[in-house]
Image (cartoon, rainbow, N blue to C red; front, side):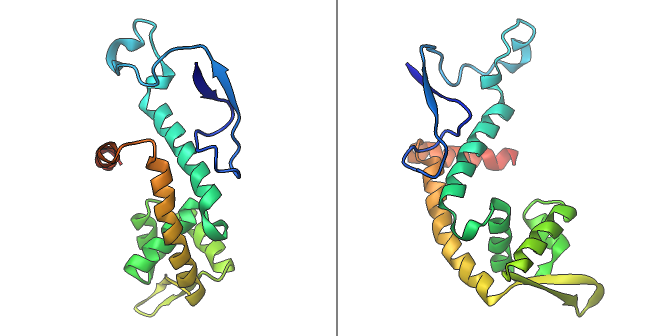
Length: 179
């Protein structure tokens, strides 16, 4: 019997903070069948479970559950990405930061506002261009970043745990190609 997750994420059940409801199914279908996209729909064989968007969404749900269970200080994935990038590149404009973490400007403003309210970043006028602002980490932001990156490695390990080291390397190489 295959284990099927219902209204839950496919995560390690040892992560007690993550909802994990399972039921048994007698269905004996492989998770990934051959990916014959071009004519699958024409023959009535369209399988959502074989579609890249569905699989990426399920993988992301699994990763999000792991991230949420393990990340310190209630940081969201986006907030964590912003802290990491600010630490990497230093003070920068919100537009540059948005580009660096692949967010639109409006979303970035909301993330910065939330981080600012938590005193993890500060925003100041750009001395070179009064129309821009510069965002940087505060001392507390650096401290939280340092704690979070340690957990970030563990999150990545747990996300990739079902794969062999060779499969992990292959997956990362392929994802980078389409990202």
